[in-house]
Amino acid sequence: MREDASLNTVQRENDTCYVRLDNYPAANGHVEVVPKRHVVSFFELTPREVADAYALLVECQTEQKSTLQPDGYTIGINEGRAAGRTIDHLHIHLVPRHYGDVADPRGGIRQVLPGPSPDEWAG
Image (cartoon, rainbow, N blue to C red; front, side, top):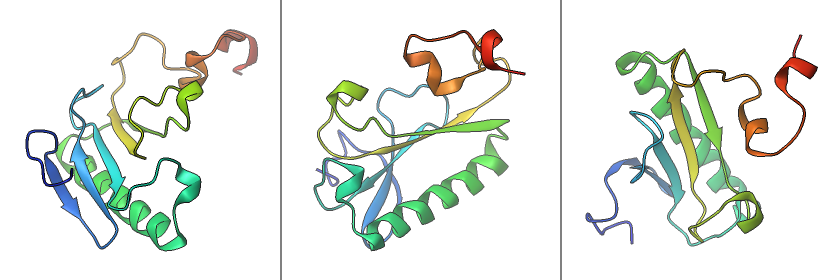
């Protein structure tokens, strides 16, 4: 699947993982780190794959920092269908974020579930 250019725009890779542009990006520069071995869950990764995935995340963050100059990042994995996974192959999202890209970013990931307003718990 990695080799299918109609599905993947591969940016870089190492021995066990690769980076591809997200096909439906949440922001300019949104990429995914994907293991080459088919795994569904983050918890199936070997220690080597975790280290290689992390190394690619750092490389991408370094590049994004210089080219896109984001104010922050959202890093995420939808672990399981209940968490929103739609593709049954692990992928780790790295989304560069800028002040003003959403009206109120407080709470970040907490905004995907019902719960208290950031005004109730943020200091």
